[in-house]
Length: 84
Image (cartoon, rainbow, N blue to C red; front, side, top):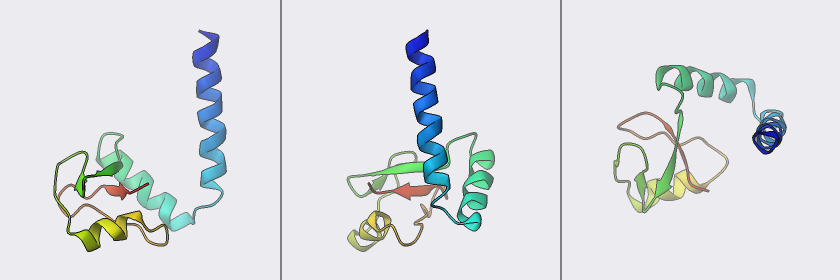
C-alpha cells in the first residue's frame, strides 16, 4: 500500500509542476473538458490518429499535435491530442 501512496504523491508533485507552467486559460479548457468527457480530457496521438475515438489525422494535423506551442483538439471527440 505504501508503494501506491508513493506513486500518487509523485504524480501529484509532477502535476503541480506542470500546472505552474500552463496559462489559466489552458487549465480552464482542460478542466472543462475533463468534466465533459468523464475524466478523460487528453488522448494520445497514435499512428496519426486519436487513441480514444480512432479519428485519423492528416500528416500536418499530426505535426500540429506534436508541437507544444498550441493545443490541438480532435475534431471528432474534441479531446486535447497529446503527441509526445
